[in-house]
Amino acid sequence: MSAPARAVARQARAARAVAAARGATRSPPALDERSIGLEARAEHDDHLSLKLWLRLLACSTQVQTVVRQRLRESFGISLARFDYLAQLHRHDQGLRMSTLSRYLMVTGGNVTALTAELQREGLVRRERDPDDARSWRLRLSASGRKAFERIAREHEQWVIGLFEGLDAARRKALYDDLGRLRLQVSARATGRTPNHQEKPA
Image (cartoon, rainbow, N blue to C red):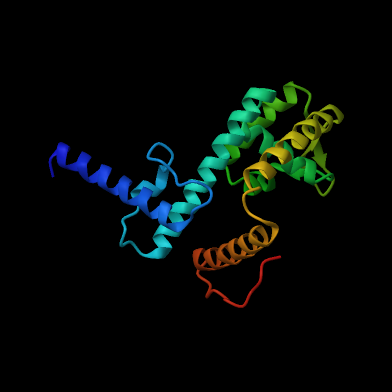
């Protein structure tokens, strides 16, 4: 297929995706071609599961983009740093680097680099693990905890605002359905047979 033909095909897919989004809901207003994002990859006759996957990706990307921008503008902090601090804030006893890496779904090298930066800034401290003298545990310092809690209050309001178009019942149903989906995906990824009756915590 020539380059002009490919361009026309891409535009057609984007137009169909916009039309599908408009047909799916009347409120909020339909997405335009600038904001359709990953859903522009969907064909009109694609399987619903594929279109759902692309919509999940698009929603996640949009929310992350908004939150990342606001964190930068309001606090001069990256989303990666915020997520790192959030995990330590949830675990007063501290976390090993390997555990923190797993929770953040990033490589150990990324955690090591962030740890060094945050230690230099006095937001994180590293202590010997009482259960294993060869390992280290990471904890928030007093100033790190105070700084994170100030940011987290604003962050929570941003996220609440982004989801305010869904009433409480819809948010709860979406939360439960995505929890079930995660259990099924996790089961398939580890070679287990999904239990469709299993409920997320």
